[in-house]
Image (cartoon, rainbow, N blue to C red; front, top):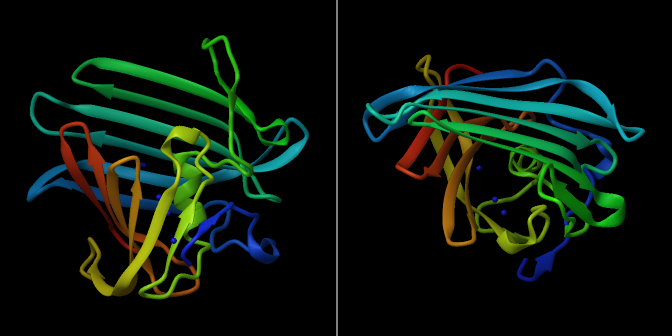
Length: 227
């Protein structure tokens, strides 16, 4: 997912003032579509707080199921993300597509600028204050971008995908699954030749009302069912 995502390149920093627009227990449910075709559902959760290597973290999860006929998919991501600073400490990703499963587990150690995939046998260098793709989604909610502003970020934990450029393209209404229309700030996120779009509600919660994401078999649109 899967992110000025100010000219110039910025290094990710912790949340200003330690204030987040999300709280433990937040659960957001989405309907998925491939073009006009229903393609399953997804759920994001701020599941709980925890401790990793002595540091307090949020535990974020995102799960989904669906896909086109013959390419049924299921996926799950879990991110253990430090609160101060807002940096990834651990990240798991499991994807099943057409009966084939890939499971990746990463230990991320920001203090020593390294990460390791379990079973991989070697360490890799991270940028300062690294974030995985699920943590990036929550980090986007903390950015106060106005239409026309953009930022180039070098905070994705796998350096080869940096920079991630985030541009606020304007304000747009989004119709949720329950028919409610909410005003949103539209973001375009580009990295390593791929583009995603994120619509955040234009309020204090900055909920991801819609996500348009690239997949191996096309693009999926996730629409929030209700605020």
